[in-house]
Image (cartoon, rainbow, N blue to C red; front, side, top):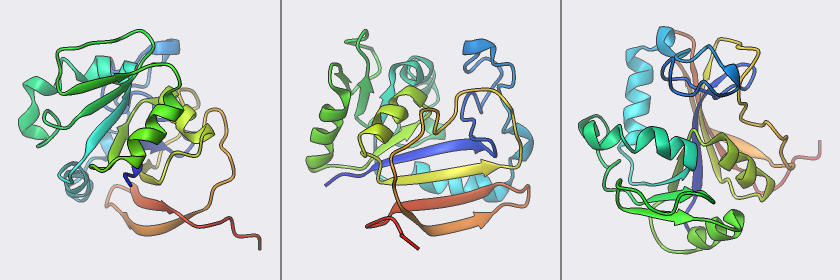
Length: 196
């Protein structure tokens, strides 16, 4: 069975919007794009490259796909495998795209993702895709959170747990703190909530 792994840059107050650049996602008037830049260091870069070099397919929301589709085909040398990975795109409006291989999912996204999880294949990595993550959370489809937690609060912006979450238990399987204070942590699903 395939795992759904959510990989996110996240602020202390839970914001995941536009970590990479000022024009990445300005929806809702978000003016803090590029907020991770001052926290980069070699340790974080090594951790990111290790994740990016694992075997994976992508599960993306339409907005993230729209941002990535024109970029990664021109910059694939920076992320081995991104262009050959199958991209599963959750969208009720987009049915085709030039960035291949791509599979467009519409309708009951939760059921379609559940079906994909049951198939043999690579784990599904979710980057960005805030609206999609809310759907995955509501339907208990996330197996792992791989988070880079930055020592910053933003006050506004799209949040990882925007609509709350169903009760879930996780265990830390790996963690480290970078010299610039970013906590890199892997949370794997635990079998049950601890009732203590």
